Image (cartoon, rainbow over all chains, first blue to last red; front, side, top):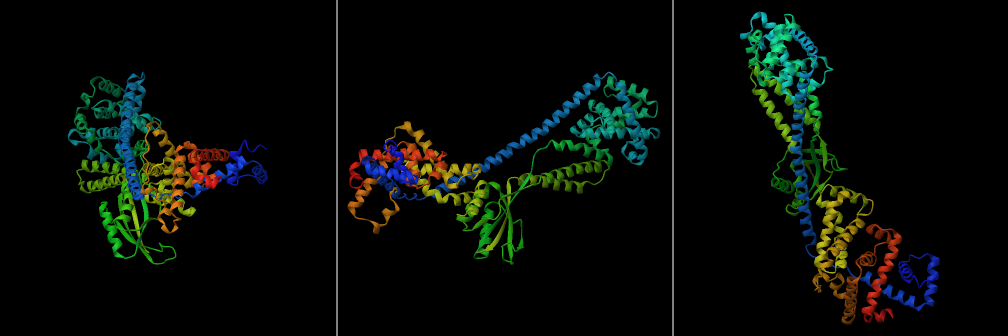
Length: 439
Length: 198
């Protein structure tokens, strides 16, 4: 083998003892004969040794400190970026709602257009008629309730039942009117008989500002020959755009009394609540926002007892936190049956890293995270609360229409809103449970 | 540091825990600083690029999957940081006004009792200076190989991981790099080593 040609490789591998036994022996034989390669080996071995003997330079003073400072800055910067990203999501989240509302509005407009363009309007009026029948039946069942809802001033006894039925239909429309997406669902889901039927009226109502008049008019005619009357009414609605027909003057005022959407809200009964809740589901499914809580367990090494607790309290005050809860856990420290005391604080997530450094440097506290930061998904909890809020709104509206005291409900509502806000703000917070363990 | 401990610190560091990251990487501060110092040849740049290395490591620790040792991952970042720095500063034609500063003092220099005598010290210092000069003249890709292998005593496998090259390439690059260093030292500073290598 011509070792001289590849002397650099063989010399290097020989120094590092990387040659196979046979190769090594052959190379050693070669070295005995070739002074040039032997000289190269001598030189290279010496320089390699010189490098190996070269002492490491001492780390400059303050290296760790200045690096620490820079790392902390990055940590804070990154946390801020994260929270900014979360903030940026909010408008997007809101936009999605806006988008949902806009698309709902678009569907309504399209539905109305389609309705007006449909050649066989009679079939939809037939549907309307069946709603009347249903409404009338309901009215018969709940006549007592209805009496309270309908303005009696403008309805004489004979008309009472049908007027009430009108309101019953109004309820459907009110439900739909209250919530754009509900209307959307009602309109699009023609498979559901009742909803589909209601939607026919809903369309008319949504299309015209005096929609409830239509219902009122129709109710008036339910007791007569409905089909013929409806055609006539339909014509009136279409031509007069919500101006009450002569026949419905008596209802007109009652209808006007429930003209605004707020007023419409008041004429709910439980069944309608259910309808609304059922229809509200699709709105939630469009929401992708998720909510989390952050939680971590840390230990504080205690040597002097109270001193560390006091220091921890001072440290937490610096981060605007006060004790949220405290207690003891038995057997927290492995192989130790005694109780371990803990205290819980909530601080900003972006302060979490800085707090640990501060604890170490300023307060000489020995903190150790015993768990990773535990993120708990509370999205479901959030939406459950949101649904409660919706239900509460309905209750409040009903109570208002009945002239009942709503102060309790209002308190409950503000509590719920507070809870919802807390969930949102908790996204950027972390709850730390500090366990005090003996050194 | 035990594997379990390193893993725990890694997980925490991945979540942005500065303290855990410092605990994990603190062992390599000196190694990385020395790598940078030998690559860049002056303490100021070395300090800056060593810190840059750890800052990058902290930023990207989330992406560290643990496919290699944490140390080799850190050395890889340090190597790339230095090579980047050299590339960016290549056209700046800076005149080195390098002088011995307190940063150049090694631990051995501080131990007076270990001192072998003035002549010997003078000779050793001259050789060190020659080595340093030769290093600075080397092609940077050869330089990093010599630093990793001969100054830091990394195994072929660790070098392969640090530079993300195959073992075979490591072998050939080590031999090339050593040959270059030998040429540089023997051509200009032969007189310093005559007693030892002739």
